[in-house]
Length: 330
Image (tube, rainbow, N blue to C red; front, side):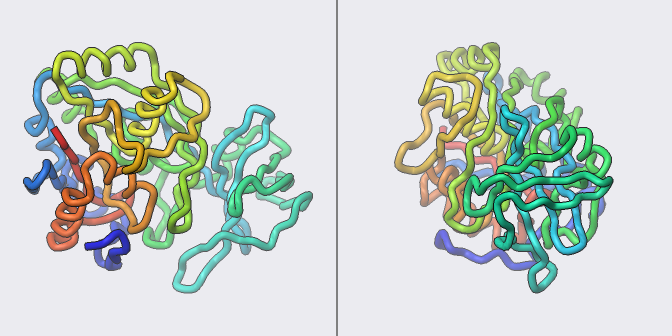
């Protein structure tokens, strides 16, 4: 396998596992630790970690961030302090997919459902606009928005399908999906085994970057209590296991910069490595994505290559409703 591997359409998760007859915690869990690989179900997780380990989770809740027009969709990504939002415009593409729409101009007004108006101010990136809606965005999205859905998911699912059990702070354009397989029963079993669980908040922006496109700045907060638990766990010899690449980004931002809240532009790469995270629970990621570079920073290219070859061979499912991967390097 190379960084440019292809994911067959048969290995894309087209609906939540509940629609496939599984519980949330019934999805498959590939465990990779150095040269060793093992296949489990997610509900086995408590037995795969040790007392004294710490799981750090993202408590960001998903917004219904997509507003659909006749020929376009507006994806609300990230709010700014001045009341503007970063938004992405997407249009239909062949095969039922969508693609970024590049035909808009600064100053253009877009009429939205409910007689709302969105004014495009300026391009923030080649794909994202800074824009201003003429009313409160969260309240508007609660009435007119739907969860962002890509072409591999054939139908709309309710917002609850895009929330995790940890979701308490609304703000993510797309679900922090590594936390989706957790259930109250799994969390209870973890705590009963002596494995701590602590939150951070990182609000994800739109997660549809083109290949080789770096991640955008995102809002985050690492509570003082969580930072302290991370420090105590490491001193005691336990493992800090991040639930999702968002958690890695938040914890590593704090480790590298000393800041515990605000905006993070930190990108975890094999070149700069990781300082505090010993393990990661994550989904299976697209080829040539920044997520894979983050995984390589944690696991190394050899371990990651073996794991992805095993996932492809065993028919693991990709994307937010798919299967999971526990990476340990200690």
